[in-house]
Image (cartoon, rainbow, N blue to C red; front, side):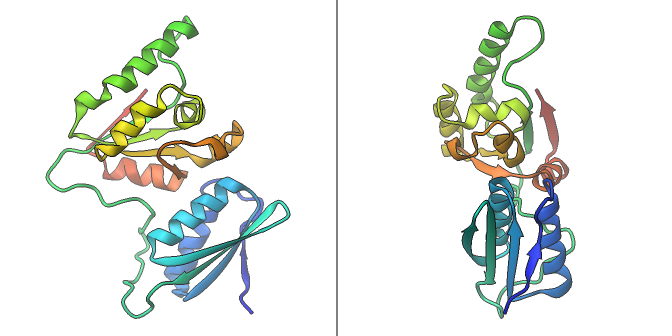
Length: 204
């Protein structure tokens, strides 16, 4: 019987960090992980998939069991201690990462700030091809969710190759984790690693 790695009660990015450490130290062919929230579940699934594990999930009441099985034990490269779930950056093109931390731009009038932020997102395509990654945190995650007029704008950017990520803990906090319409759910480990990989980071 497989023992569960108990990551219940942990905040982002602790579950992913625990999973990564076990893979690095023990190189298991199968690893079962227990988490107690949807955001952690999605983050662990994504990390497993990026490490070439096949994933199955089971919902147990309000908790989740995620089982990762290494897809090809023989041909799978060993995971380094710095490996993360982020995608490989492009070669030869400057990589700009934009962090969107709010649902409005500036301070003063929220209505004006909302309009300015939407116009900013629409104009981001002018940064191509240097625009590499868009990361939404805090109230900024609302732009990736159902009902946001920014969703088609972001979908167009994604179709052009821009990586779009939304903080899973933030989506869960605002109860819109199941309403995400564009991009991938991410965690703090991915965000920090993305900052290291980027040539420049712009925070709005």
